[in-house]
Picture (cartoon, each protein chain N blue to C red):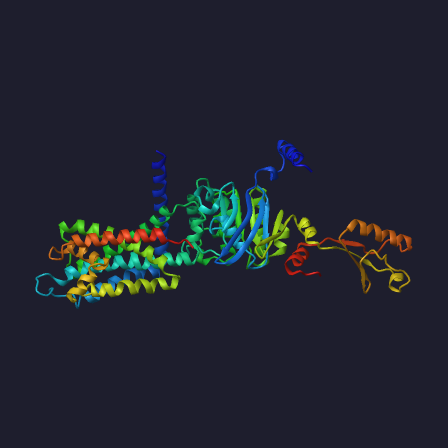
Length: 256
Length: 326
């Protein structure tokens, strides 16, 4: 009974926090605009050039793979890069320390922040999917919804927890963004996120498979075309990284 | 006085329902030590803060004020000693303690895009029992700025918003770490008025500052912290006395004193500069009696412009912290 009340209170507070974070996000118009502009610009530029045509040795349209991989890219930017940098800035500015002066629970606060990130991610995903469908006719499979919804949820959880971990690794607010970019961008390029026809040597492909970037992209791609790599291994990769991210963030999260 | 007698007296006062000073102390610090690596910062700090008083922690930069306060707030771990804040050890940052205290940190940012009222409101939600929003806005005089985004506020307004957030949970105990640093005179006065309001509401306040006038104006009791130790504790008068700052008695030196036909009693330490004679003493009443007796005996009449200058907090502070004898 008491536990239910406490849980309801935590959920209520997290929801309020998420709402405040969302409002703040949209108020900084420039920040919001460019958070959306990056994946959309890549979608249109690469989608209409490199990614058009069929994948090598198949009858699968490149854009069927490219649109979901840009959705994955959007998830990574919003949940990993932006969240990591945001938390590092909040810590640097003393906002986290200020939160710590109140009885607000860490769970409720961080759930709220993560909830707002999830909302932003869903909005970016919707934009990418819509423009992908209108511009390139790339629509998800009807039976691919579990992969899409599950992949999105797991992607936000995984990269969000890694973003939290990243914010604690970065020693200063300034270094959070460079660290985030340096850690995911090479992986994203080598994973073929920006080029559906991209291929790498076998050993490198195996190495990249250990990381969550290609894993998320492949799960989402499977939501668009059954020809994509079956995502069971990818599911486990994402789960493992989520667990690692959560464990590290819990262990090392700093309020000041 | 024996302990039993003291206890009886305390009981009497408690029964009379008098002064909050008989309640258990809001803060108890015993032999508190803390160091960074092998550099000691606090070397055995002792003090108590009574419920309902404004207690001021003074000291030069680097004396350990902020470290002490951050230990009390639960932000730093001590190396040794005992600390009780509202009867609870703050080291584990228990939420039930944070529900009862309000903290204004020395430097602390805001979520910049949030609006004033919106931010205060969510802060109220963090606490089980909060003060009404309108009330908080009024106390810190931000009612007209309620819809402003925090990033558009001036420095003084932000500091007042700091205070509003610290008061959101209607705390019993409030920590203010250098609340008026960087203020213009008018903002300082407003902040002081807000603090005096809180005292009237029966709140206990722990204030750190390096403005002596601020301490003199606001503090019921104060402690001077230097090099990791409390040098002295008490009211402003007690501190001055303990610091051994002498009282100054001044008067216009009579003609006959200046031309050398009358001499001062040898027992008094008097110096004449121009027309003004200054007597420096640790025993004001005795010195006054002696001076007036000497004046009468030498037929000097009443000493013109006779005045007694009590030591100020500044004198005491300079004496203690700088070893200044002026």
